[in-house]
Image (tube, rainbow, N blue to C red; front, side, top):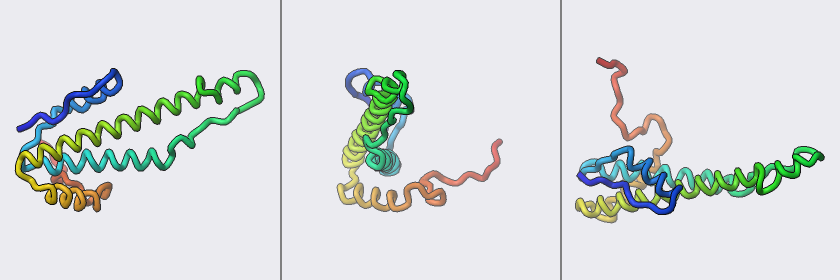
Amino acid sequence: MADVVGGGSPNFEAALWADLGSLRMQVTPENVLQVHNAIKAEAEYLRGQLLGVGYSLRVGKPGLEQVSDFAASDQGFNGKIRTLLEQCQTYARILSDAADRLAKTAAGYGHSEQEIVDSFRKFSASFGEQSASPLPATSGTHS
């Protein structure tokens, strides 16, 4: 089994890689494509959501008093919104990087490039559908 997640760079990114690393994901030749597909699909979904809102999220000046000028400034709400969007973009990139690493791991396990692409295409066609979960169904009873 291969440990997939690691690496990273300055503070925020390192913390995100550490969060992924704390999941202790272990991949095998049998599950590497499923793990790759789930992470890549989530990265693409998040990027799509971010493109949908982009930097158009801005707070206008809520009133005429001085505090409203600050609230609408880059030091106020708009700066915080921009920072949050940048953090989300970084997280999507890190997920994408992890998926790329998983694709390389899959190739190392003997999966062809075409198998990796076809597997993701099949997975992404049903991504988000509850009935198409890649996880096995549970009976609903626990012992």
